[in-house]
Length: 457
Image (cartoon, rainbow, N blue to C red; front, side, top):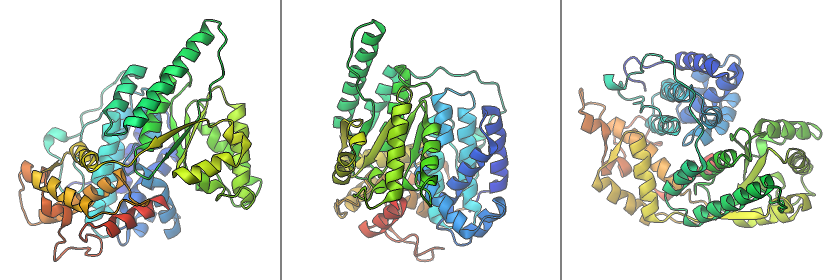
């Protein structure tokens, strides 16, 4: 579902590669990341794998869904390449974010039009643009106003990296997470003094910089990890400050021996920054003896952490009890991960702040009645271990944006206000003649949980 003059995925990808070249990013890496993002956004659209395969020559349907799994993490956060460009203060970070936003918009052209893809694309585009401080971009359902058209290419000077104070201020501006903020501030103070004592020639105990993040999904762990990577760089503890986010599938290979190589390569890509391993306990399934491949990945990780201890930080994350078992099961891990930060579930008011913030970033506005409706949705939602917290709010917004687009389908010239406002009916009502009735059902606990479980798979 693209607006007038919308770009195809091939066009958007070609423009992205031009920016990537200027930024010194390898074509293969930029292409793979962009295609994964597009697949993640369009995976619910019938016929999307075939259209996606026309851009990725020789790709199969399985390749499409494998790419979608990799790209899901970027539906609400900057991609890995963009994160590195931001961390390095690259002059191309805004242009790259805008090119990624165009890729997100182009994902709406894959397969048959669906409202969910429109919502996915809007939120993902906003995440890229907001992270880089770039202009907003209207995606999919309507052409962008002239005031939002891409500016002529101009030479932009390299931007200085953010200071510790600026990054801590960004942390403090996050919704909720009071305990997390206190612990990060404490950790920064300890590491700063340790560094100053070392520079002054004083004895100082070696303090491990590696961290364990525990909490339910969607509680901001990746966002905080990204800020920590920047803070450690600003403190002079890391040389680059990039965040490399992985899970078991990106560390473990199909047979013994290959896993060690694969894990070492991933660690090498994170040197100078932070390696963030989500659901790290999946490497061992709770029993180091039962999973030779996971054990090989863990053993390699411990060795690499030791060999690269001067310019690498590892953050492992997941549910509290499995993470405790994972760390205690291996002496090498237990000696390196001594600081655990707990991420609590968000309150209803905090989730509302997250929802309205996401909407604002995507250039939408929730009317008061829509906010009230969201509170009703929350009241009927179970808060068990599968509850997605911030992801729940994002999924609600993505679905609402899709319904908003469908509601305006017969309005020939909607006003700017109509284009921006999310109404209460957009959060809960299913259009009787929707293109994809199974995709746009009333937001309920089961609906959103199913989406989130797919993201965590």
